[in-house]
Length: 242
Image 1 (cartoon, helix red, strand yellow):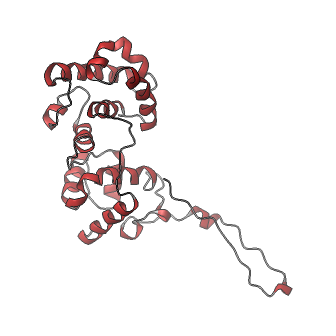
Image 2: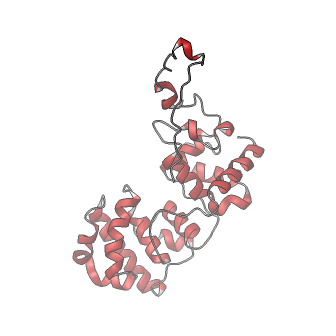
Image 3: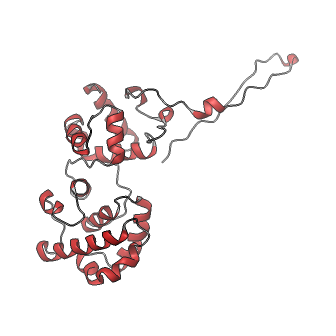
């Protein structure tokens, strides 16, 4: 993608959503860390449903550590891989209490040393909790970046490095959220909704997915000859998702 097109792309994303935020629910850096740790191979909706109940009774590393594995596990049963995630969260809380005074470190190396926390999770926390210009490449961002030729790569790290070079400086803090939301709701994996994409004219992806309503619209009815009016047809417009 040309530099001028990249600038225009993020200009449009900003115009449509000036202050993008994660769909995970949290109030503190620790709650965000816990939610992101739990979100691997799970939907944000399932994580939010679980953490609403969990954070109502324990929302600090010390409080969750006090629950222990047996006390924490029932809150996480509805989340995929809940057994391993329960153990990781307990051990993460133990390290935060013992080595960081119960606070989430604002340091990549320290974050990645926590059980169950990899580079992507660390990037989310650094970006969303602390406002760092990092790029957490999940499956949506990986797909969108390659499809739009914004940053081409065979691994998440290659795409991350490419995005850090390609994204305009003034868009770096919010780019992660714009791209993940775009991939989740518009530039979908199996059938991207190109007909309602706000940046379709900038995207080199071919062939563009046609509007299904345009193809399925009923043929116009013939008007009575005496009316003297040409036949008309109408079709519904697809509404953008909020």
